[in-house]
Amino acid sequence: MFEIVEAQMLTDNIKRLVVKAENVAHACKPGQFLMVRTDENGERIALTICDYDRKQGTVTLVLQAIGVSTKKMLDLGKGDCFADVVGPLGRESEFVNEDINELKKKRYLFVAGGVGTAPVYPQVKWLKEHGVDFDVIVGTKSHDTLILEKEMEEVAGEHLFITTDDGSYKRHGMVTTVIEDLVKNEGRKYDVCVAIGPMIMMKFVVKLTKELGLPTIVSMNPIMVDGTGMCGACRIMVGGEVKFACVDGPEFDGFLVDFDQAMKRMALYKTEEGRKLLEYTEGKTHKGNCC
Image (cartoon, rainbow, N blue to C red; front, side):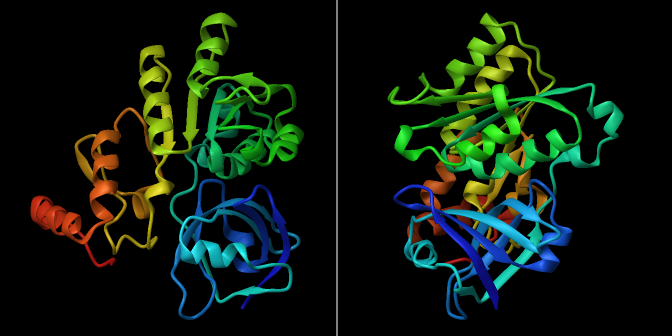
């Protein structure tokens, strides 16, 4: 059993949980994720690691209540336990393995949308600790849905730019508007962009960064289900090749990801008839062990 040592509601349906998982905490790296179950009969849920403390042996998770399983997780509090916490899974962010002296020559732009702020946080924290320059854009629907502002400010300081769709806090507009403002109006130069958030947000960020000639990494964690490559739910096309987000990613070259195909597939995968159609059209490359 994995004890929850801290629990905090961030919004009405988003919660931050700090979980005792020593082996995971000692092994995990930015960009990786975990598979979590509330009890022995619970559904496995893929959650990106938001933070980790190797000394305390804890990992921090941020979850949003969408279905029954995540709603049950939302009801958990300090002292409760998860039946399973498996990981770390997936590939770590590429920069973790780069030569640090070469990495320090680069400047990163991070773009976080909604709950995507959680997986962005450990990446910018890691870069801060290693002396790498970056800016961070956090976009959300309104002030009420903004998460981890304090944590981001502590790491990014004046390099943090917050924008809300409705203009209720800080800047008014989409994250793409802020990217254009920083690059075109302020003349900021970046070597790499990392975008994590809803699929539609990442699609339009990539559309813009292509025009700007800014290489972009995206995280496909929103479409993961079983986390092992067995179910086939996270099947995507990257540069014309079949990839699975949970085992080949979750991070990919955004210029090569077929977002339209991925979003259409996500919609089809939600129905039994849709899954049958995917099985027929995808042939030998189809995996469909997930109900």
